[in-house]
Length: 120
Image (cartoon, rainbow, N blue to C red; front, top):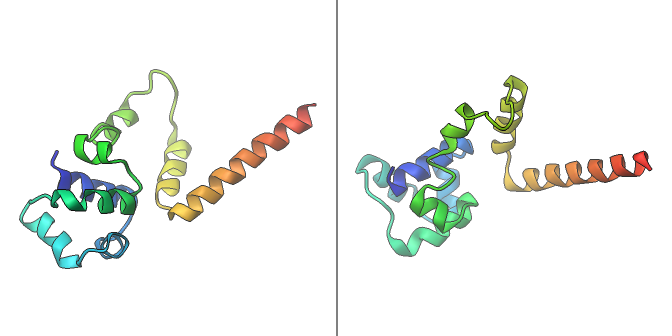
């Protein structure tokens, strides 16, 4: 999978529009459209801006680690079971804005702490 293909896969998974991505990364929408239409990759100096906008690491973008194999996770359930409600929860989580994700994770941590206190 090419870098630009990974970018569009991540955009789809995050339910982020090209326009939103362009705004976050500081690119023109036409530049992003060119990557898709012409099947070209962004230049090396844009990698960090892309990673910051998509909240991924350069390693993930360049190698596909955790991105290209994301579909394998769905089918590989040897170590845990994923049901429809789990999948829906993950889809909802990945559809959230970063600030919403952070807030949700803070809620989860708080609930865990409360649960520990209740067990005492």
